[in-house]
Amino acid sequence: MDWLQAIILGIIQGLTEFIPISSTGHLYLGRNFFGLEEAGLFLDTMLHLGTLIALVVFYKDILLKLIKNPFSRITALLVIGTIPAVIAGVLFSDYFDSISKSGVTIGWEFLITGAFLWFADSIKNGAKKVEDISLFDSFFIGSFQAFAIFPAISRSGMTIVGALMRKMDKEAAAYFSFLLSIPAICGGVIFQLKDIASGNVPQISLTSMFIATLASAIFGYIAVKFMISFVKNKSLKLFAVYVWILGVVIIVLQQMGTF
Image 1 (tube, rainbow, N blue to C red):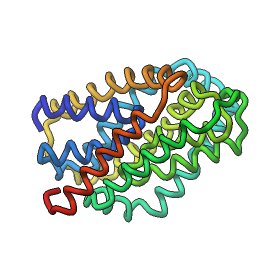
Image 2: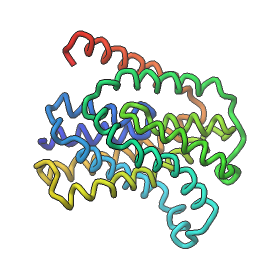
Image 3: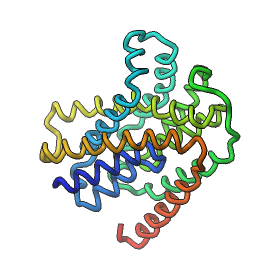
Image 4: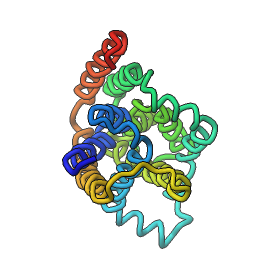
């Protein structure tokens, strides 16, 4: 992976982690386009580390409060909301790792993501802010996050939809969606440490990896700020149409045997 490929993949990860069009699905396409299939999940994890850094910077004030008061209500919401993703990861991680590597269902998953994004626009804007949501609300939203174990199901898209279904205000829904992704992304990074410890990692230039992670962090921060503002007054249908077109193209290419 050269520095240009690193920058491009970092930009893809940073933008698509929070713009609801699936970062994992786009990274799969990017890796295959550049012939970096062997980099696989390790590269994805390091790029996710970049978006984790973006989240830590963006939410630094609330994270500092949680450190000072670790038994706060927000902590409880994040723990409860993360449980479904943990269960899905523990029970089905090997199966979904094989799906991610093959990409056999990726086109259909983009179509499903689009359907949920389109549905989101039919949900009447609620009035709940983050401080108003219940533990059940958080668990419900986290259950939607668990579906993102499929490689081309958007984590941010699903959690925003789940939050809107629980009558959250659109801006608050995006804010909580990205906040809830912190423990999930952090857990994914930590999970990969066993591969690093065992030496089971691809031979990738440390410079290229640093550049990719930095680009992911920078563009991730930009995407978080953009989406929280965008969701407030704009429609998600634009993203739905995009992933539908992408999904159809992938399915057609797969049927033709060229993908």
